[in-house]
Image (cartoon, rainbow, N blue to C red; front, top):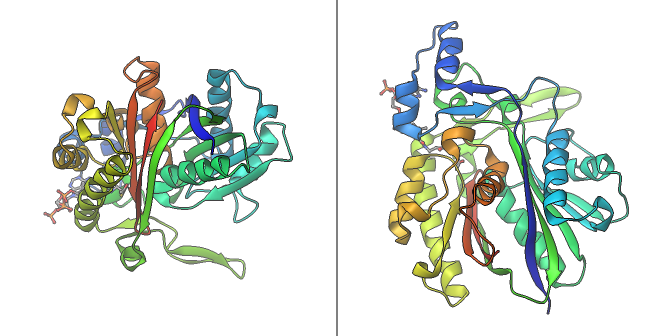
Length: 324
Ligand code: ACO
Protein backbone atom coordinates (compact mmCIF):
# COMPACT_ATOMS: atom_id res chain seq x y z
CA UNK A 1 0.00 0.00 0.00
CA UNK A 2 1.37 3.48 -0.83
CA UNK A 3 1.95 6.15 1.80
CA UNK A 4 0.67 9.73 1.93
CA UNK A 5 3.11 12.60 2.34
CA UNK A 6 2.58 16.30 2.96
CA UNK A 7 4.60 17.97 0.19
CA UNK A 8 3.51 21.60 0.54
CA UNK A 9 1.75 24.02 2.87
CA UNK A 10 0.12 27.41 2.36
CA UNK A 11 -1.93 30.02 4.17
CA UNK A 12 -4.03 33.09 3.68
CA UNK A 13 -5.06 35.61 6.31
CA UNK A 14 -7.34 38.56 5.52
CA UNK A 15 -5.28 41.79 5.71
CA UNK A 16 -7.42 43.50 8.38
CA UNK A 17 -6.01 42.87 11.86
CA UNK A 18 -8.27 43.66 14.83
CA UNK A 19 -6.42 44.01 18.14
CA UNK A 20 -8.05 43.25 21.48
CA UNK A 21 -8.07 46.99 22.25
CA UNK A 22 -9.86 47.78 18.97
CA UNK A 23 -12.41 45.05 19.62
CA UNK A 24 -12.94 46.26 23.21
CA UNK A 25 -13.55 49.80 21.91
CA UNK A 26 -16.03 48.46 19.33
CA UNK A 27 -17.96 46.47 21.99
CA UNK A 28 -17.93 49.48 24.34
CA UNK A 29 -20.03 51.37 21.77
CA UNK A 30 -22.79 48.81 22.50
CA UNK A 31 -22.23 49.12 26.27
CA UNK A 32 -20.40 45.77 26.43
CA UNK A 33 -17.31 45.61 28.64
CA UNK A 34 -14.17 43.64 27.85
CA UNK A 35 -10.46 44.37 27.85
CA UNK A 36 -7.15 43.37 26.30
CA UNK A 37 -6.10 42.13 29.75
CA UNK A 38 -9.17 39.85 30.21
CA UNK A 39 -8.81 38.36 26.73
CA UNK A 40 -5.07 37.71 27.06
CA UNK A 41 -5.32 36.26 30.58
CA UNK A 42 -8.25 33.92 29.81
CA UNK A 43 -7.32 32.91 26.25
CA UNK A 44 -3.82 34.04 25.14
CA UNK A 45 -5.36 35.85 22.13
CA UNK A 46 -3.92 39.28 21.25
CA UNK A 47 -5.41 39.93 17.80
CA UNK A 48 -7.38 38.29 14.99
CA UNK A 49 -7.69 38.73 11.20
CA UNK A 50 -11.19 39.64 10.07
CA UNK A 51 -12.40 39.38 6.46
CA UNK A 52 -14.18 42.31 4.85
CA UNK A 53 -17.90 41.70 4.35
CA UNK A 54 -18.46 39.90 1.06
CA UNK A 55 -15.20 37.95 1.17
CA UNK A 56 -16.10 34.26 0.99
CA UNK A 57 -14.62 31.07 2.36
CA UNK A 58 -14.00 29.70 -1.15
CA UNK A 59 -11.98 32.79 -2.06
CA UNK A 60 -9.64 32.59 0.93
CA UNK A 61 -9.45 28.78 0.59
CA UNK A 62 -8.32 29.24 -3.02
CA UNK A 63 -5.59 31.72 -1.99
CA UNK A 64 -4.27 29.24 0.61
CA UNK A 65 -4.45 26.40 -1.93
CA UNK A 66 -2.48 28.41 -4.49
CA UNK A 67 0.22 29.13 -1.88
CA UNK A 68 0.40 25.41 -0.97
CA UNK A 69 0.65 24.39 -4.64
CA UNK A 70 3.49 26.88 -5.14
CA UNK A 71 5.27 25.50 -2.08
CA UNK A 72 4.87 21.94 -3.41
CA UNK A 73 6.05 22.96 -6.89
CA UNK A 74 2.85 21.64 -8.48
CA UNK A 75 0.25 23.02 -10.87
CA UNK A 76 -3.43 22.95 -10.01
CA UNK A 77 -3.83 20.51 -12.93
CA UNK A 78 -1.88 17.89 -10.92
CA UNK A 79 -4.60 17.76 -8.24
CA UNK A 80 -7.21 14.98 -8.40
CA UNK A 81 -8.84 15.47 -4.99
CA UNK A 82 -9.91 18.57 -3.02
CA UNK A 83 -11.29 18.32 0.49
CA UNK A 84 -12.35 21.54 2.22
CA UNK A 85 -13.06 21.60 5.94
CA UNK A 86 -15.36 24.47 6.85
CA UNK A 87 -18.35 25.43 8.97
CA UNK A 88 -18.83 28.66 7.05
CA UNK A 89 -19.42 27.43 3.48
CA UNK A 90 -20.29 29.96 0.76
CA UNK A 91 -23.61 28.21 0.06
CA UNK A 92 -25.91 25.45 1.30
CA UNK A 93 -24.72 23.81 -1.90
CA UNK A 94 -22.66 23.33 -4.05
CA UNK A 95 -19.79 22.53 -1.73
CA UNK A 96 -17.04 25.06 -1.11
CA UNK A 97 -14.59 22.46 -2.47
CA UNK A 98 -16.32 22.53 -5.88
CA UNK A 99 -16.13 26.35 -5.90
CA UNK A 100 -12.41 26.16 -5.04
CA UNK A 101 -11.85 23.62 -7.82
CA UNK A 102 -13.48 26.03 -10.29
CA UNK A 103 -11.48 29.01 -8.99
CA UNK A 104 -8.30 26.95 -9.46
CA UNK A 105 -9.34 26.42 -13.08
CA UNK A 106 -9.47 22.63 -12.92
CA UNK A 107 -12.17 19.96 -13.17
CA UNK A 108 -12.61 16.22 -13.15
CA UNK A 109 -11.08 15.23 -9.81
CA UNK A 110 -13.17 14.65 -6.69
CA UNK A 111 -14.13 17.66 -4.55
CA UNK A 112 -16.21 17.73 -1.37
CA UNK A 113 -16.54 19.43 2.01
CA UNK A 114 -16.08 17.99 5.46
CA UNK A 115 -18.09 19.42 8.35
CA UNK A 116 -16.49 18.76 11.71
CA UNK A 117 -16.13 22.36 12.94
CA UNK A 118 -12.75 22.91 14.66
CA UNK A 119 -11.76 19.25 14.04
CA UNK A 120 -12.49 19.72 10.34
CA UNK A 121 -8.89 19.82 9.13
CA UNK A 122 -7.95 16.64 11.00
CA UNK A 123 -11.09 14.94 9.63
CA UNK A 124 -10.32 16.15 6.08
CA UNK A 125 -6.66 15.09 6.29
CA UNK A 126 -7.62 11.62 7.53
CA UNK A 127 -10.21 11.25 4.76
CA UNK A 128 -7.79 12.35 2.02
CA UNK A 129 -5.08 10.05 3.43
CA UNK A 130 -7.47 7.09 3.26
CA UNK A 131 -8.47 7.91 -0.34
CA UNK A 132 -4.83 8.21 -1.42
CA UNK A 133 -3.85 4.98 0.33
CA UNK A 134 -6.80 3.22 -1.31
CA UNK A 135 -5.64 4.39 -4.74
CA UNK A 136 -8.59 6.74 -5.35
CA UNK A 137 -6.38 9.81 -5.63
CA UNK A 138 -2.69 10.63 -6.11
CA UNK A 139 -2.38 14.32 -5.29
CA UNK A 140 -4.78 16.12 -2.98
CA UNK A 141 -5.43 19.58 -1.61
CA UNK A 142 -6.70 19.55 1.96
CA UNK A 143 -7.89 22.96 3.07
CA UNK A 144 -9.28 24.37 6.32
CA UNK A 145 -10.99 27.70 5.66
CA UNK A 146 -13.37 29.87 7.65
CA UNK A 147 -15.02 33.25 7.61
CA UNK A 148 -16.08 32.70 11.20
CA UNK A 149 -16.76 36.40 11.72
CA UNK A 150 -19.96 35.83 9.71
CA UNK A 151 -21.50 33.53 12.35
CA UNK A 152 -20.43 35.43 15.47
CA UNK A 153 -22.83 37.38 17.64
CA UNK A 154 -20.79 40.60 17.93
CA UNK A 155 -22.80 41.53 21.03
CA UNK A 156 -21.81 38.35 22.92
CA UNK A 157 -18.46 39.06 24.59
CA UNK A 158 -18.09 35.47 25.77
CA UNK A 159 -17.69 34.23 22.17
CA UNK A 160 -16.91 37.08 19.75
CA UNK A 161 -13.47 37.78 21.27
CA UNK A 162 -12.32 34.21 20.63
CA UNK A 163 -12.42 33.78 16.86
CA UNK A 164 -10.83 34.98 13.63
CA UNK A 165 -10.90 34.33 9.88
CA UNK A 166 -8.32 32.57 7.71
CA UNK A 167 -7.40 29.60 5.56
CA UNK A 168 -4.62 27.02 5.59
CA UNK A 169 -3.89 24.27 3.09
CA UNK A 170 -1.63 21.29 2.53
CA UNK A 171 -0.80 19.37 -0.63
CA UNK A 172 -0.69 15.60 -0.17
CA UNK A 173 0.99 13.17 -2.52
CA UNK A 174 1.02 9.43 -2.84
CA UNK A 175 4.53 8.37 -1.82
CA UNK A 176 6.82 5.37 -1.32
CA UNK A 177 8.05 6.84 1.96
CA UNK A 178 6.02 7.07 5.17
CA UNK A 179 4.35 10.43 5.73
CA UNK A 180 1.06 10.15 7.59
CA UNK A 181 1.79 7.51 10.24
CA UNK A 182 -1.43 7.19 12.22
CA UNK A 183 -4.84 8.84 12.44
CA UNK A 184 -7.80 8.78 14.81
CA UNK A 185 -11.25 10.39 14.47
CA UNK A 186 -13.83 10.53 17.27
CA UNK A 187 -17.24 12.06 17.90
CA UNK A 188 -19.80 12.25 20.70
CA UNK A 189 -23.07 13.62 19.34
CA UNK A 190 -24.64 13.71 22.80
CA UNK A 191 -22.55 16.89 23.39
CA UNK A 192 -23.90 18.70 20.29
CA UNK A 193 -25.40 21.49 22.42
CA UNK A 194 -22.19 22.71 24.14
CA UNK A 195 -20.90 24.35 20.95
CA UNK A 196 -23.26 25.01 18.06
CA UNK A 197 -24.70 27.42 15.52
CA UNK A 198 -28.17 25.90 15.60
CA UNK A 199 -29.73 27.72 12.65
CA UNK A 200 -30.69 26.78 9.12
CA UNK A 201 -32.27 28.15 5.97
CA UNK A 202 -35.68 26.58 5.54
CA UNK A 203 -38.65 27.52 3.38
CA UNK A 204 -36.78 30.68 2.39
CA UNK A 205 -36.16 31.90 5.94
CA UNK A 206 -33.45 31.64 8.56
CA UNK A 207 -34.81 29.36 11.26
CA UNK A 208 -33.25 28.81 14.66
CA UNK A 209 -30.22 30.74 15.88
CA UNK A 210 -27.66 31.49 13.14
CA UNK A 211 -24.96 32.54 15.63
CA UNK A 212 -22.33 30.46 17.39
CA UNK A 213 -23.22 29.62 21.02
CA UNK A 214 -20.94 27.93 23.48
CA UNK A 215 -20.76 26.60 27.02
CA UNK A 216 -17.13 27.66 27.45
CA UNK A 217 -16.34 25.70 30.58
CA UNK A 218 -17.87 22.45 29.28
CA UNK A 219 -15.93 22.83 26.02
CA UNK A 220 -12.74 23.51 27.97
CA UNK A 221 -12.98 20.30 30.03
CA UNK A 222 -14.04 18.17 27.07
CA UNK A 223 -11.19 19.44 24.84
CA UNK A 224 -8.46 18.75 27.41
CA UNK A 225 -9.59 15.17 28.13
CA UNK A 226 -10.39 14.26 24.52
CA UNK A 227 -7.14 15.50 23.01
CA UNK A 228 -4.80 14.15 25.65
CA UNK A 229 -6.29 10.63 25.25
CA UNK A 230 -6.37 10.87 21.42
CA UNK A 231 -2.73 12.04 21.28
CA UNK A 232 -1.59 9.10 23.37
CA UNK A 233 -3.62 6.71 21.19
CA UNK A 234 -2.12 7.74 17.82
CA UNK A 235 1.44 7.86 19.11
CA UNK A 236 1.02 4.30 20.50
CA UNK A 237 -0.71 3.21 17.25
CA UNK A 238 2.42 4.28 15.30
CA UNK A 239 4.68 2.38 17.73
CA UNK A 240 6.31 5.62 18.92
CA UNK A 241 6.73 7.27 22.30
CA UNK A 242 5.85 10.87 23.13
CA UNK A 243 9.53 11.93 23.37
CA UNK A 244 9.88 11.07 19.64
CA UNK A 245 7.36 13.77 18.72
CA UNK A 246 9.12 16.89 17.43
CA UNK A 247 6.08 19.19 17.39
CA UNK A 248 2.61 19.23 18.86
CA UNK A 249 0.35 21.33 16.59
CA UNK A 250 -2.98 21.49 18.43
CA UNK A 251 -6.19 23.25 17.53
CA UNK A 252 -5.69 26.88 18.52
CA UNK A 253 -8.68 27.59 20.77
CA UNK A 254 -7.22 28.75 24.06
CA UNK A 255 -3.65 28.78 25.35
CA UNK A 256 -4.82 27.37 28.70
CA UNK A 257 -6.39 24.36 26.93
CA UNK A 258 -3.17 23.87 24.92
CA UNK A 259 -0.99 24.07 28.05
CA UNK A 260 -3.14 21.48 29.87
CA UNK A 261 -2.94 19.10 26.88
CA UNK A 262 0.83 19.57 26.57
CA UNK A 263 1.28 18.80 30.27
CA UNK A 264 -1.00 15.74 30.15
CA UNK A 265 0.83 14.40 27.07
CA UNK A 266 4.24 15.22 28.54
CA UNK A 267 5.20 17.45 25.58
CA UNK A 268 7.32 20.43 26.74
CA UNK A 269 6.12 23.95 25.88
CA UNK A 270 9.05 24.55 23.50
CA UNK A 271 7.75 21.73 21.28
CA UNK A 272 4.21 23.18 21.03
CA UNK A 273 3.30 25.43 18.08
CA UNK A 274 1.13 28.34 19.20
CA UNK A 275 -0.28 30.90 16.77
CA UNK A 276 -3.54 31.80 18.50
CA UNK A 277 -2.00 34.99 19.91
CA UNK A 278 -1.93 36.31 16.31
CA UNK A 279 -4.75 34.37 14.59
CA UNK A 280 -7.23 33.65 17.47
CA UNK A 281 -9.37 30.55 16.92
CA UNK A 282 -9.90 30.08 13.17
CA UNK A 283 -11.76 26.78 13.61
CA UNK A 284 -10.95 24.35 10.74
CA UNK A 285 -8.15 26.66 9.55
CA UNK A 286 -6.26 26.77 12.83
CA UNK A 287 -4.08 23.64 12.48
CA UNK A 288 -2.98 24.18 8.84
CA UNK A 289 -2.35 27.88 9.59
CA UNK A 290 -0.17 26.91 12.57
CA UNK A 291 1.66 24.26 10.52
CA UNK A 292 2.38 26.70 7.71
CA UNK A 293 3.53 29.46 10.10
CA UNK A 294 5.91 27.07 11.88
CA UNK A 295 7.30 25.78 8.57
CA UNK A 296 7.81 29.26 7.17
CA UNK A 297 9.60 30.54 10.30
CA UNK A 298 11.90 27.49 10.22
CA UNK A 299 10.70 25.73 13.38
CA UNK A 300 9.13 22.73 11.62
CA UNK A 301 11.60 20.95 9.33
CA UNK A 302 11.42 18.11 6.80
CA UNK A 303 11.83 14.70 8.43
CA UNK A 304 10.29 15.80 11.73
CA UNK A 305 7.36 14.06 13.39
CA UNK A 306 4.24 16.16 13.97
CA UNK A 307 1.23 15.47 16.17
CA UNK A 308 -1.70 17.52 14.78
CA UNK A 309 -4.93 17.66 16.79
CA UNK A 310 -8.41 19.07 16.35
CA UNK A 311 -11.41 19.38 18.65
CA UNK A 312 -14.70 21.15 18.13
CA UNK A 313 -18.44 21.17 17.74
CA UNK A 314 -20.33 17.95 17.30
CA UNK A 315 -18.57 17.15 19.60
CA UNK A 316 -15.72 15.96 17.38
CA UNK A 317 -12.03 15.42 17.92
CA UNK A 318 -9.09 13.60 16.40
CA UNK A 319 -5.36 13.38 15.82
CA UNK A 320 -3.02 12.90 12.87
CA UNK A 321 0.57 11.83 13.38
CA UNK A 322 2.75 12.65 10.37
CA UNK A 323 6.41 12.63 9.34
CA UNK A 324 7.01 15.70 7.22
N1 ACO B 1 -14.53 40.13 28.69
C1 ACO B 1 -14.75 40.31 29.99
N2 ACO B 1 -15.45 39.47 30.77
C2 ACO B 1 -15.96 38.37 30.16
C3 ACO B 1 -15.78 38.11 28.80
C4 ACO B 1 -15.04 39.04 28.05
N3 ACO B 1 -14.79 38.89 26.75
N4 ACO B 1 -16.40 36.95 28.49
C5 ACO B 1 -16.94 36.49 29.63
N5 ACO B 1 -16.67 37.35 30.64
C6 ACO B 1 -17.06 37.26 32.04
C7 ACO B 1 -18.24 36.36 32.27
O1 ACO B 1 -19.44 37.07 32.05
C8 ACO B 1 -18.05 36.00 33.72
O2 ACO B 1 -18.53 37.05 34.51
P1 ACO B 1 -19.30 36.75 35.91
O3 ACO B 1 -18.26 36.05 36.75
O4 ACO B 1 -19.65 38.12 36.38
O5 ACO B 1 -20.45 35.87 35.54
C9 ACO B 1 -16.54 35.93 33.88
O6 ACO B 1 -16.00 36.67 32.76
C10 ACO B 1 -15.97 34.55 33.88
O7 ACO B 1 -16.59 33.83 32.82
P2 ACO B 1 -16.26 32.33 32.58
O8 ACO B 1 -17.05 31.84 31.41
O9 ACO B 1 -16.34 31.59 33.86
O10 ACO B 1 -14.70 32.46 32.19
P3 ACO B 1 -13.67 31.35 31.85
O11 ACO B 1 -12.48 31.49 32.72
O12 ACO B 1 -14.32 29.99 31.75
O13 ACO B 1 -13.21 31.79 30.41
C11 ACO B 1 -13.55 31.10 28.16
C12 ACO B 1 -14.14 31.82 29.35
C13 ACO B 1 -12.33 31.89 27.71
C14 ACO B 1 -14.56 31.05 27.03
C15 ACO B 1 -13.15 29.68 28.59
O14 ACO B 1 -14.20 29.01 29.22
C16 ACO B 1 -12.67 28.87 27.44
O15 ACO B 1 -11.67 29.14 26.83
N6 ACO B 1 -13.39 27.79 27.14
C17 ACO B 1 -13.02 26.97 26.03
C18 ACO B 1 -13.84 27.35 24.93
C19 ACO B 1 -13.08 27.68 23.69
O16 ACO B 1 -11.89 27.89 23.63
N7 ACO B 1 -13.85 27.72 22.68
C20 ACO B 1 -13.39 27.96 21.41
C21 ACO B 1 -14.25 27.23 20.48
S1 ACO B 1 -14.31 25.59 20.86
C22 ACO B 1 -13.10 24.92 20.17
O17 ACO B 1 -12.48 25.48 19.32
C23 ACO B 1 -12.77 23.59 20.68
